[in-house]
Length: 132
Image 1 (tube, rainbow, N blue to C red):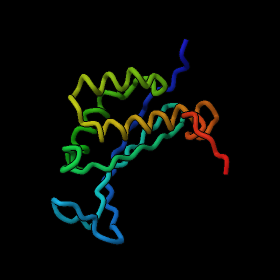
Image 2: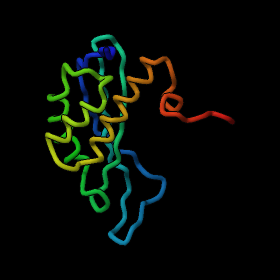
Image 3: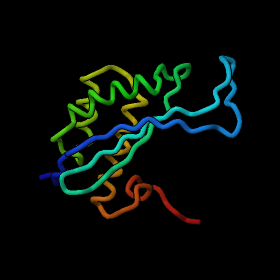
Image 4: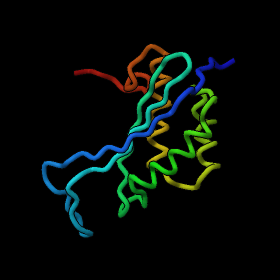
């Protein structure tokens, strides 16, 4: 049986990060990265964070669309098992097609929770090594 860590609250934060230099593409220049932070808290007290960096010309998502879609995800995921990441992703996929930037923020927040529950840093939980 899978351990249960129940999703209790989900908070979304809009974050605008000024860039040192404009990000210039053939479509224009941007002065800031407009990201979204996802904070998932379990009833057991574990907090996971995720972030996405939507960019409309590249992935068709903006900070605002991610925030709106994220609110739907947050409502649907309350009470679910944060450690059953596959089921959480399937639920998000049923709510809306694509929108991969905002889904990635929820995904990494869930993996952050799973790594903490396993007593490991996230990079090690995902199979990475710190050999420096």
